[in-house]
Image 1 (cartoon, one colour):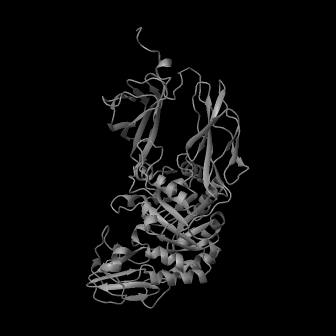
Image 2: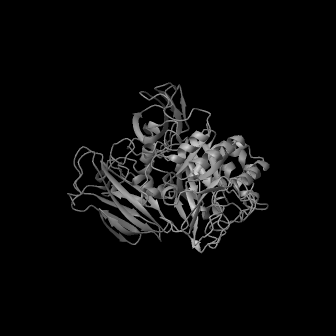
Image 3: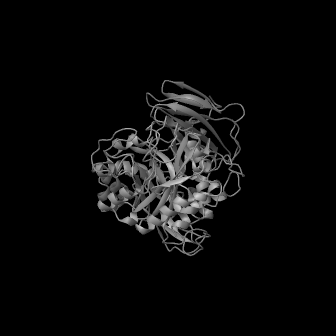
Length: 589
């Protein structure tokens, strides 16, 4: 017994931190990071925690994980037990169930690095953080005092998620900043035992002066593109492609798709793609490789680097989409709680500086998409009101919305007019009106600007949708016209003109009946135009899609309508030199 350290001594120079890396509803990924915060080497480590009943580890790596009932123990493996001062090591696991770890111990002591003293709680979050005295290169920060049962010792000041100072007072002036640049600050308290409390609410600051960098002039029309997190896999499309294609200097906003909506909350969509994937130097926006121990990787970090080079670009995190809209019905039962969960995730200190707001893509409120919603016509307005109240005037709040302009259709199903006062703009999804889900046709353009003789469904046009939203009281300046960077097509078609019969969907690279513009422009070049959209008949295939010429025409129409600009789905469908992005940019000038 003489050789054993007491629990209070055992972990006084090391910490263990848990992060949920992904969540797929029935299970999740987790990671523990052990750090030696002392001055002598650590020869081994053991992390213990408790899970609630129904939650368990299903697989693990870089540690030996065992359990006794709901109590779990992870011990280092042979190669990663020794940690020199300042060094860290991580191990991961996959779990099932909804719970989170509690009661963490590291080598028998507290996981926060302080002695395990009964009754010694960590400090509270600091009070409201504010910024003042903003110059080209500095900002003064002030915050309210935190509380602690044994006294607060000092405060860590975080800039863009990284600690930049530790101070004893309630103010700090951050110097050496870059003019005309966005920063996000937050503060957390430390007590006399060096236990850290929760990070307080963040505040965003933009320094004065500076060149706004390449890109549109202030007040220009919006040119917004969706970037999909799954595109980094099979499509091999990364944030850097926005730079190499020349698109970064022409767009104004990016919607990062998608976050999920689960159990009444905004949740991570794909943790690996979002913030874990390690980028090599040749894949990275700035040509610098990620390191194993940096606090943020993945597309989020690449977007951070993109914004540093192109400070005019604003990024919104989009939640929902066709596949993940099923959770909105539960979420809007408590709009304030839902908005709080979304704010907490978007403004997480690890990536708060990356995002300038939130986009809600609910397909569709009080109507049917992949699933049917019966929340009632007021649910959408209530949700957006809660979002604006939580995100405030300094964040963007937007929504992607239906373009069903039929009488009694999806636009009529929800109070889009009443909700408009709370939003910066609507992304009107003026595409996918027609497609090979009608396997035998008739062939029709999937993104018709206007009606035409023989259109399969009246009201399924961009013009009808925009007119319907205007009739609901939505200002034209809050409406963006949607452009698809892809085509929809049928096979077994003999007729060149629209209205022909078919035998089914045409083959596509990733999905039947759909193909990227960058492929179609060469494999099936356009040979006709209908309702402002190109179409092509090649062999027995019939496709409709937008080309630079039809996009230019649509942008002229959007300007004549007084619209706020345009958006598109999505970047990876464009050519390597960004033909369609350029057409939108030039067409909106």
